[in-house]
Image (cartoon, rainbow, N blue to C red; front, side, top):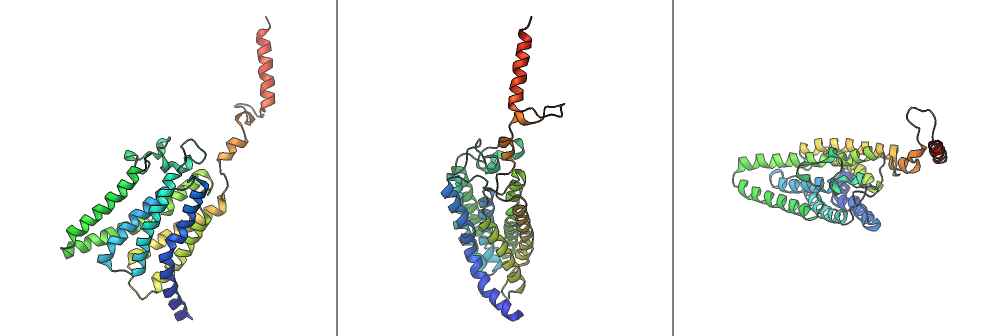
Length: 285
């Protein structure tokens, strides 16, 4: 029975890993394009996945890990480029509903979200593509410079491999923070979460049962990412995909809240009556 499960996992999991970028993020991109809004979606997700996938691609010559993981990285780069383009094309205005939840799309109004040089918070799409291009060019240059020196290259390869996998392991964290701040998972597709969790389960089984070369860097970072994805699932159960805390202000105007120092609630009608009485009193000599 165990042999059968291992053989099945060895056949299905590599195919699933290769297709997972399309299955996970294709629906997210289609949803944003259809709604003409990327509110609630963290633009840090394409950033993390592009950086991690490019580093994993250049990690391959030194590590020679399973080919399915390399193909997954190549497919992921293509999918994330499309996702970034769609998200930038349909980013919400900072003042629109969901603008606060989509802080990376524009310069944040709150100092809490300011980054050095407004990194990945640029208003123009051009700097995003420049950063990706410069990163790719830098990796190509390092590959050419270090590859003739075997000892140095192996250290460099291991370094970028661990950095890339560690960055990928942090993928759910920006979305976790956004969900926690808004008390809602609106804008984050349930299909993406389902694919992440299914992928985690299949990867964990395959990583520890596969006869092919799977470095421990993949295993340790995969365990951490699986824990974060599981917490995202808990958030979805807690918050759902509703409007979150923003509706509280809309549904309960300021004049319906308790007056400071009082135990009563002043409604709009009572407040208007009180103002008329006060004005009448002032006119009496």
